[in-house]
Image (cartoon, rainbow, N blue to C red; front, side, top):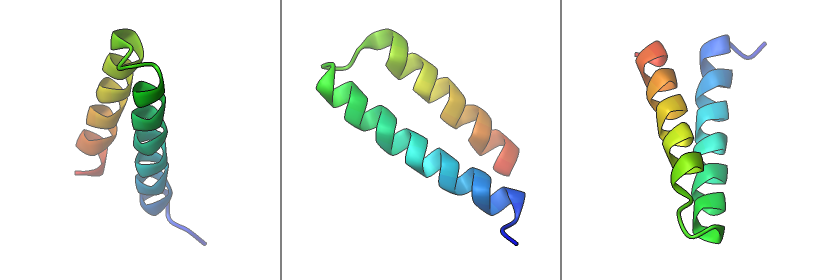
Length: 48
């Protein structure tokens, strides 16, 4: 079984990649980008 930690790490990487792609498509939409940054920070804090 995959551990929760590994799953969360993969989820963060995928969501950041999606966020970056979406941000490029929308020419860095501030609201979406801020949300993405907040979520990635929260996940990093949890994983560490």
